[in-house]
Length: 411
Image (cartoon, rainbow, N blue to C red; front, top):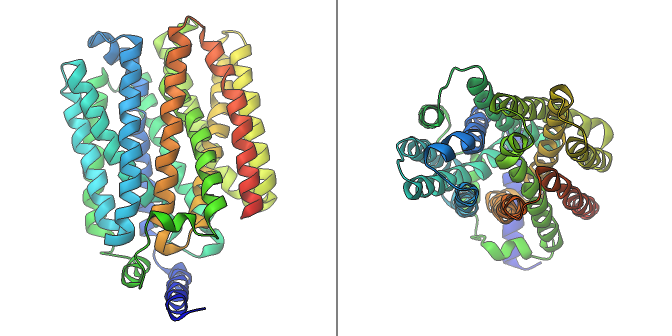
């Protein structure tokens, strides 16, 4: 080991020690991350839940509605990569606060859009802010306690995202919010308030970030492909691509697919509510299942559950109760699968490149989240029914499971 490597190793040991010492620290950062995740989930699903409404008012075709989802995801792709990279250099707090405030502001602007072009432009900018926030929420949750419970904390924090989706569905189904503009206004005000809380109550920088900034190396993108990380990074990216493709297909198209099958708008919103509410509860439970059963059996159970529940929704009839149950089970397994990957991503990378590692995985995963909704758009535009979209998820889930199991073997 040369002098440079020796000094790097000592720096990383000091960082790891400070993480362990922070176990007794207040849990305020984790709580703020969980609240941030709820708001992120609210705004992530604002467009998908309100798509039947804004597409009608703005006279959008199916393809143009798909562009709204695609541009939002493109913003997420760019924002996640830049947000994780920036936080490793300038600290988690300033990048997180800026990201949360920006997607709140852009969501308010989105509520004022009166043309298809301006609506699409604001959706891209909202995605940019959302993308910058997510890897920092994951990294801060990972760094808010001891290493032995890191994955569990990340999974529990991530469960806040479907809670945000459940909140928006409940507000619309109950009639508390009328129209898509009101949804976007609420989705803009909440992040601005949360950004203010983060600015006031989060520490200026965690010891981890401070030390990682003063380390002798300035890790770049190539560090993710060093010998210890190369295979893990590739498998993680593939797992993210495939799983996020499924998630965003379901998030963006589930209400519309159900309306195409003959459900009314309120019933479709209730299914979206079940998807998010039970997804949040199930994801939180998976954090403890992971501790009890171990990673291999937990991942196997989760992806098999995703395959069975998706096929069930496609094959069962249109009786509301079974569809509501199937929607809830899909939420449990598809969101649980992604949150397991979030926890694994935070656990794979050392502190000095954790933001970049998680951010790049989230960002590369957005390629899948673009491809998923785009595939659904193409299938529907070609004249195939909504069940064909749902059945197309199954082979994708099988491939995602294979990637996850190989990644666990490497880890």
